[in-house]
Length: 68
Image (tube, rainbow, N blue to C red; front, top):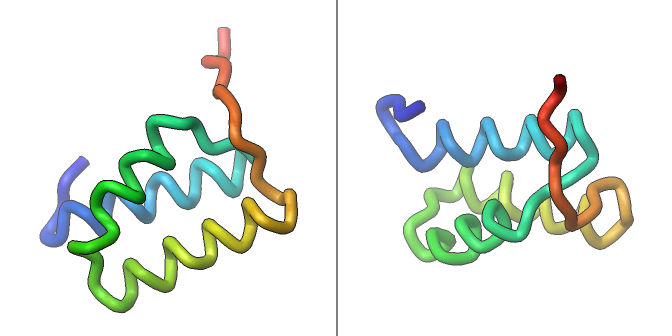
């Protein structure tokens, strides 16, 4: 799961998962806040977009159920 910049790869995957499912988990949100001081400008923009989507209700805080 780690690329050249492991944080960006994880943040990008987290962002895509949250957008596609409409859900971000508490653990994922905690990971973003715990690592935000290490983010590059690009990563900060992704995290801000994630926050805006949460604020507008496009993404909900909750749990994701694994497909059967």
